[in-house]
Length: 96
Image (cartoon, rainbow, N blue to C red; front, top):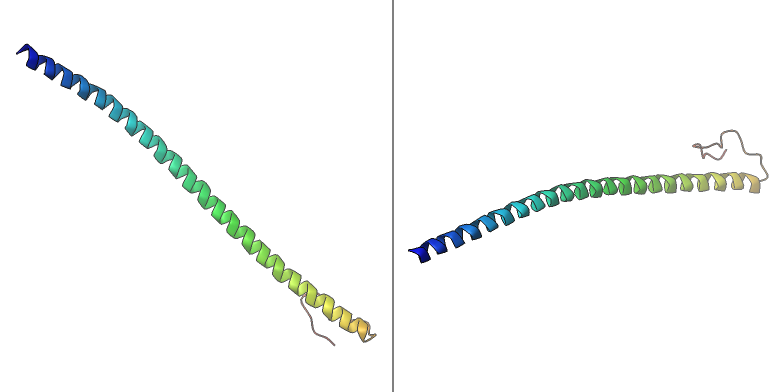
């Protein structure tokens, strides 16, 4: 009987240790969940920032092309020895 009681106490001690370890692992898991949520939020913010930068670069590229067209129009006028008319302004590339 003493042997059985000893085994029961040993098993109860193991259960107690496992419960403590399980609680510790649950806390760590919860902390990891918070860390993962933070990383996902940071990642989403970085994606949005990258998209905004890419859009800005595309906008600037388009602006650069329109600037090149303006310079070309101006030089065509110069080449013809004409004074560019006031119509040749930003946004109006008509050659008069």
